[in-house]
Image 1 (cartoon, one colour):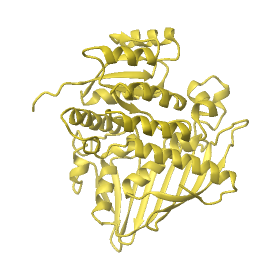
Image 2 (tube, one colour):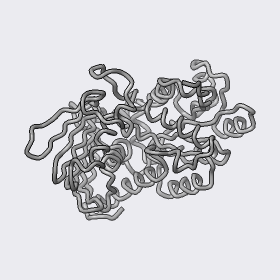
Image 3 (cartoon, one colour):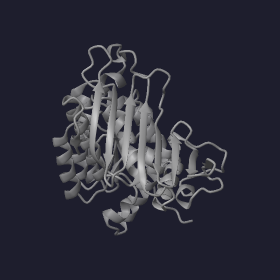
Image 4 (cartoon, one colour):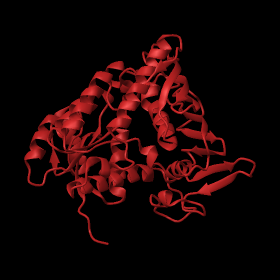
Length: 381
């Protein structure tokens, strides 16, 4: 196998005390497809320099504007940038790099407002660079298995889609105790209009649409702020109407004691059903109507080519969150090299989530907020 040069990567955000920055760095290196060489890692020059020194980066910048301008002028500057900031910074950062033809790998949701999202879409359209949104759960092998089975018609006509993502970490008001991750996620100025619906509800919504190939046409939402003094939802229930007639429900919560990262998806059609849980990601349960329930395992008997392409180790050796995230990064590296070799953006992106999925996520958040404000009235996306 011929050597493929590592994609030169930069990072904005993701300093020493940021959880998701570490996840992105690990994921980018698992398959040895990226080399992190530059960063503007924090909101102040001092913190950015300290984080860059701790990571051993050869080039550390005081802010993202300085970084974008400088890297674009280098003969061997970064080819892509990971944006791992709070939501309200996504647009300004992405715009700087997209304008210079530097590929963007951005955390979700797309932005903090629909207006910024529309501007982001224009910036992506005007750029020659790729825009990848890190809906990482779409790159789990058994999720690709489920998608392939549905596309092959094994479930028949889809009827019911059930998605949920419960957590418990905001059951207590950690935002009042100095926890940075809780502070910005409960702040409308930094998080946007959605609390739990933006942070984890968008993952459940995206996964349901990705696996089924359906889009949500209408929803009715009931959002709650159970935490004392909270301005953003920490629990939400939604009824969904999909294009084509399927119906669904979505529940997301960050105040459900006993739940850690309980993302689950269940899809039922006229011929069968599928069930998958993120906390047990190597297993996919399939039931053909009138037959015993079957277990399909990652890399095991019955696993599809689509699933096996994203597996690294033999069946029975667990793979999970970091490997799924790494799959997304490796596909992003393939896409970057493909466009550099002359492929169109559409050809290169393949199954990668991008600006369209980002806009769909923002429409989902806005519809949830609008519906809940109207006493759970049905709202079109």
